[in-house]
Image (cartoon, rainbow, N blue to C red; front, side, top):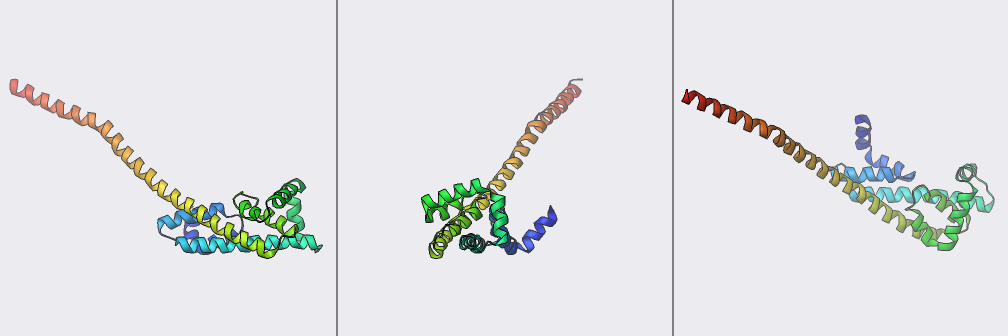
Length: 196
């Protein structure tokens, strides 16, 4: 675990880039945590995550577009087989109903980002429209998820401090009566010695 942590800290921004390129909520939350710890810069984290998300989504948009034009890219075929017709149909329905908003909204549904981008490309959404909604969605997503990671780090520190206080309290509860018993025993012993 410590080696993984060292790897993350050493290659932090590369890990953020490649992690957010491929559905990166967990990586982005970890990045926000490391911002809190002082290992990363929040603005750089958000910019890199946004850029990687846009590149990944545009790649899948292009794959969807290639399916529409009949190019039938092998990677798109594999992805379509993996996703399944039922999910693709639901994604298509969502994109048709919500248009550009769907590109923004799909960003916040874990695991559907690529399917949404691919569906938008397949349905012939304009690249400019897709890019605009994707940019807004990616930036909002990176800010929100990065902030959640930061708050997680802050909460973890508060929990740790709470545990320390609980340990001190427990020590006082356990040791306090023992100390009082010891002091009373010594006092009684001295009183007996004086009266004897």
